[in-house]
Length: 164
Image 1 (tube, helix red, strand yellow):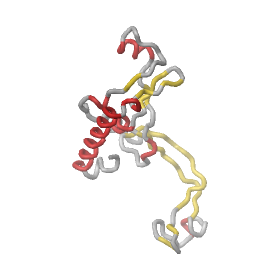
Image 2: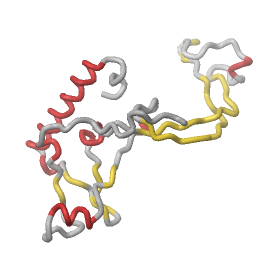
Image 3: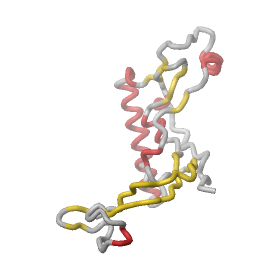
């Protein structure tokens, strides 16, 4: 669903609808798997369907200090191999061996998809108690019913966020 968002909006919307349909199917038939994990005194949202609707991730800004060619181990500026080309069955890559992180930005569409959140706090015990009523006790199993309701869209709070 991620990389198609800005390239093919029709494909992205189809993927979004499919994610919602799969989430609803799983919730209806495998409800035991739709719970909010509780650890360290807090509940967390870790459902892939829920997290797919959070259009946010991290984007590191890195200054490369040293790198080497994956074929000959020379500095890429000193060798004739081209990144992305195959040499004797091996793809040439520029391998970063020393780098310095200069900044970390929160952005809507991170280049590295593994920087998207895998867990989001579901609220403090006080907030959950206010929402769920006086019988709520921290630590009890809470089911997530998000996928049983109509999708209320994507969270695009960081839509205009970029590196400063």
